[in-house]
Image (cartoon, rainbow, N blue to C red; front, side):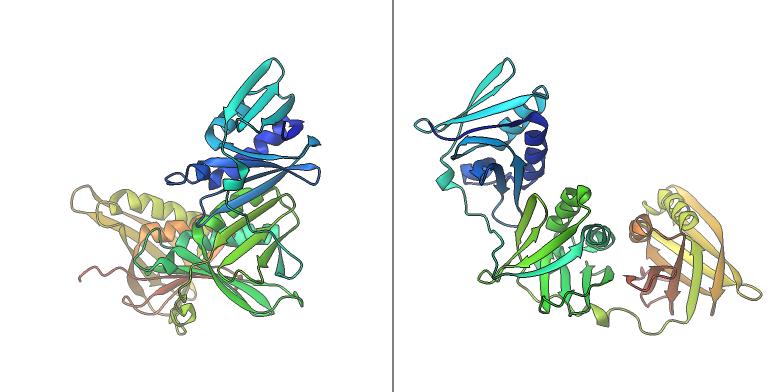
Length: 381
């Protein structure tokens, strides 16, 4: 016989749900549809990869009687384990037939597998690698505020990624899709890490944010010494790895407007509601809304958000605002405004603009670490 291991059902179920997100869906290699199950220093190691933008390893507490490994179809195992009662699950590998025998309570199953040696080697952190610790919650928050602005698919693959740049003082993350840019700086003092600049697939970071939801400690960004095209995110019981996007990321600092003439402060929730209402009409018109900034006496003012559709009609909403500068009308894609208002936590936002044909800036009031640049829509008027 080969591997013999037992582990509580809930541990196994949780570990499988973490790694199965990396399973290759459209692969020519059958083993990539499988999850690797192996013993590892008294624990159970689960791994899955699509060989490209995502590999996940998760460790599960287990009692190991005999070491060994096998790969079995991820979906079969995941679906089966999720239906089991919360008891001990016994796993045993029949090496000769490459079969995983699974027992739990009154249930037994045999799952046909593929030899573990056919599974790709997963990257692991070593002492020679470079590590940058980032507080888990800060990293999750930043991914949420930045990754959505990356391109979904693009003729320039680099735009489907997120730039992660460390300069010894802070870690900056930036994403842009040609119509908008999201940037956040995280002050971090880690003497041990050298400067770096990486472009990581946005999809990988979104998975990392989801997986790290229960992490309260640090996530380590690991730059492997001898594999320059990979990065690893190391947590307590999970490693997430990915191939980097090789191209140079555009110089995003040139996109951020240096001079703006009008500054508007608005209530975040009220602006979000006004944009959602406007989108009911704007979606028929390329999602275009008009934002009319109307200063009044002193610093008071009104912002009018309106949308017009030839088919469905029109609407407008008026918001009280604090306004410095001139009156201005500018058109935006309302989806891009809604996206950023959904991730901004602060009660008020500021919008900085200069001309109807120049980009605007949206940021949380009083938080200079975050900047969102949005291109205006051309309305042909």
